Amino acid sequence: MAVTLGDVARHAGVSLATASRVLNGSARTVTEELSAKVRASADALGYLPNAPAQALARATGATIGVLLHDVADPYFGAIARGVGDAAARAGLLSLVTSTDGDPERELHAIRMLHAQRVRAIVLAGSAYTDPEAGRRIDEALAAYRDQGGIVTAITDHGPGYGTVLPDNRGGAGQLTTELLRLGHRRIAVVTGPERMRVARERLDGVLEAAAAAGLGGEEVLVERAEFTRDGGRAAVARILDRADRADRTGGAGARPSVVIALSDICAAGVLAELRERGIAVPEEISVAGFDDIPLATDLAPALSTVRLPLADMGAEAVRLALDPVAGSATGRQVAVAAEVVLRASTAQAP
Image 1 (cartoon, rainbow, N blue to C red):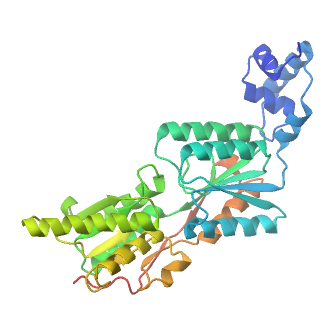
Image 2: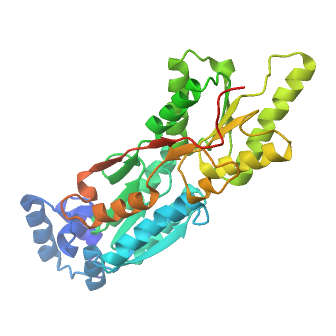
Image 3: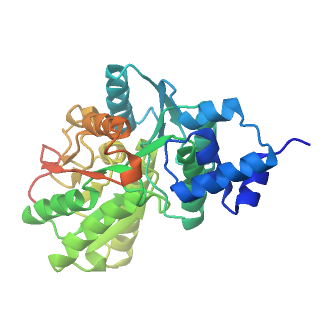
C-alpha cells in the first residue's frame, strides 16, 4: 500500500498541514526542526511526493478570485471593477463569484477557487456575525493559505487577513451627527440583515451618535431588511404603516423626520416607496444612504450619503494580495476614510 502524506504526518508527530508545507513546498515557512522531522519520516517510510500537490502548494496561477454578495449590486460592482482593473495591470484575470450573502455558498466557492489554484482570493462581501459560519469559512481559507494561497478582505473578517478597512462605524456616526445638526430628532434606520457584520458596524455608528446627542430608543426606530431596493422599500413601508396606525389609535407613533438607509440601494427603495405614497422628500421626510454608488446622484432627489472609494478599495485589496511584504500573513490593515456628502434628499427637519 502506498505511503500517504497522513502517514508521514503521524510518524513525525505533526499536523497534516505542516507535513504538506514541508513536502509540497508551500510559501508558508516551517521551522528547521519540524522540517527535519518531517523529511526524516518521509525517508523512513519511503514517501513519494505528489507532483500535482506540489504545484498547487506553490499557487502560482494567473487568476484572482473575488467573492461578493451580488455583482448586480452597484456597491459590489464598483469594487469588482477596482479588483479587475488592478488584476489586469498585474497581468492577471479576476474571477468574480456571487454568493448572495449565503455562508454555505461562500464556503463552497472558496473550496472551488482553491481547487482552481487561484493565486489569491479577495473577500469583498461582508463578514458574518454567526461564529460557526465564520469558523468554517476560516478553516477553508486556512487550508487554501497552507498551500500557498493569499487571502485579502474588504471590511473586517478578523485577524490574520490583509484587510482594506472602510470606516463604516465612523461614517455612519458622522452622517447621523450632520442630520442632528439639521434638527432631526426622530430618526428611522433601515439597516441590513443581522448576519452581516458591516450592517452591525454601521448601525452601531448611528446609535452611538444618537445616544451622544441624548436621543433614546423611542426616537430612533430600527428596521432590518436585506441590502436591496426591495428590502429598503418594504422596510420603510413597515415604518410608515406603524406610525399611521399609532396616529389613528392615539399612540406615540409620529412619522420619522428622516430615514437613514445603511446602503444606497436600500435608500433607492425608500425613495420609491415615499414617492408612491405622495410623501415629499425632503420637505416631509429626508432620506440618506451609505456608499455613494454612481446611482446616488441620478436619484430624484439626489441622495445624501456616505462616500466610500469603492473601486479604490477593490484595487487596494489586490495590491495587498500581490505585495510579498504586506500580504495576508501579516494581517496588515489599510484604513479607508468615509466622507459625508449632503445632497438634495436631506434638509432641515420640518
